[in-house]
Length: 195
Image (cartoon, rainbow, N blue to C red; front, top):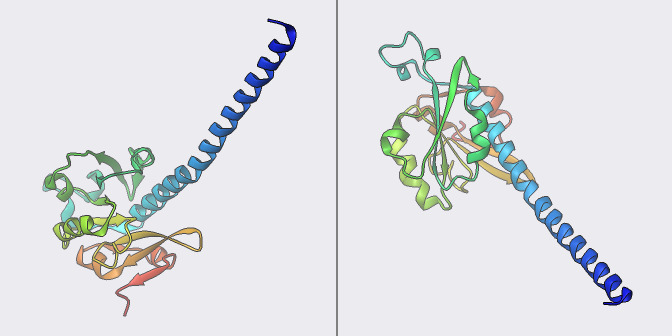
């Protein structure tokens, strides 16, 4: 091959390499908002946990207080937050160590033994049976499925004016026997069940 052909191939190779790098950068930049959203939701969930009081009857008979009992955070459904929520493992809230559990084959026993349940279904019809199954149990239910709070879930993530916000269902929280700090209520976009 002559030198001109080598130069042309080199330039073409360089341009192709730069195009591939640019496309990878754009793909990663497009992914970053999603990753940031997951991290932000995880931070919100951690603060919801920190500012929630569970009834004393959640402790097992062998425990002296609920502070000795780990706090179980469980997810059900297709969970995009899984990697972010793993970061909460071992953290403490109200003196209780957080234990995170996710499985595609989660049982109702697992759900009923948790204190925080993130419901990650694509549509509300899938969420409603889970909401009904845990109603009246001291489980803080959280989801990002539209309509979740309106249909009996405790806290629903939503986007308002381009910002991640949340809706609280006060009636659902009271039915669960939970106490949520006023600090969380004042940050909510909307509180359902207010008098």
